[in-house]
Amino acid sequence: MSPSSLHLAVALDGTGWHPASWREPVARPGELFTAGYWADLVAEAERGLLDFVTIEDGLGPQSSHLFAADERTDQVRGRLDAVLIASRIAPLTRHIGLVPTAVVTHTEPFHLSKAIATLDYVSTGRAGVRVQVSARPGEAAHFGRRSIPRIEAYDSPPAQELITDLFEEAADWVEVVRRLWDSWEDDAEIRDAASGRFIDRDKLHYIDFEGQHFSVKGPSITPRPPQGQPLVTALGHQSVPYRLIARQADVGYITPHDASQARAIVAEIRAEQSVAGRESELLHVFGDLVVFLDEDPAEAAARRDRLDALAGEPYTSDARIFTGTVAQLADLLAEFQAAGLTGFRLRPAVLGHDLPAITRGLVPELQRRGLFRTAYEADTLRGLLGLARPANRYAASV
Image (cartoon, rainbow, N blue to C red; front, side, top):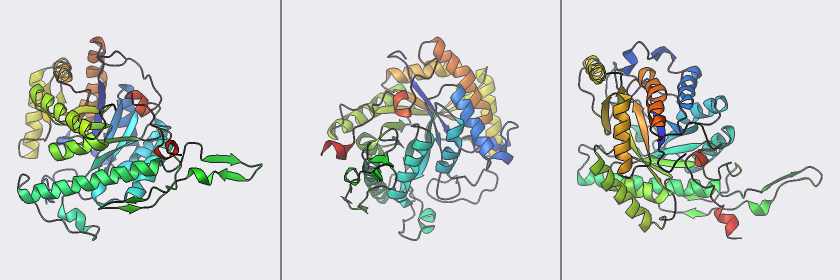
């Protein structure tokens, strides 16, 4: 890849990001809870040489409200577990990265550390995780370990205090997971039948993490993953999650609506990265975009309008919504790239329509411009993104 090349990921969620997408003829809603459905989506993404897919997840039914459940019956509700989907699909793919979502607010880091490590083994080094917090009281009630107050306004002081606490907890969660991945040195397994030694116990390490949110002794029960450290990714919309991205992530997703905003957000994240002492590390910042792609801009706009009518309201998103042609989208991606973004995570409005438009339309357009790979050039997800395999923190201290 040339220095000007960009990275592309696709966010998979149900039948697509528009809430009426399941009503499209290409949507396959009857297959949503089958392995074949997800295998087909990831195979299409891999056909387009994409870096990775993310798989959405949650700890409660999908909702049209940010912090509460709703009573709608005209939209997709219900999910399969994202980590288990990724593990099922991994053996069917060869190159593309698999990044399931983990809601860390109610999930123990020990459990997820071995789940993602296992995914890294099953995929031979193509695993990652998208860290997500939950501020919904109903989801907290599923676990009964804590209560979360109902948030009425996102920008209110109580809401911001809660969000800050949740992201501080998420930072500790990632730190625990990363330490657990390092708790086995790379050569801890001897497997010498003649001597009867399977492991070198001196190369397994207690992590002895003591923090405000977790107390974890370790070591893991799973040997160090093939990548050493699977990819850690997170979505951010404001300074609090930007700090998590800067402190702990390999890839951060942001939602700028123009190049000027993208430039400002990237600058903020880079400044926080420096404060965290990570200025020498490669940290990717991807822009998130919802996409409606058609051969004519008017067709894309009309399709969005038709889906909005089916949904009974205009579709809105935290990310910029793009309607138009692949050439117009390529222009926009180049503009955002010039503002400091190193890649993009595209959210297909209708997976059955817009995912093939990305892989069979946008990718060739970017290739013609010299902005995207023409073949996979690495065997691991870290390798695809130019991220070195990190040294084991415990081995280095011995």
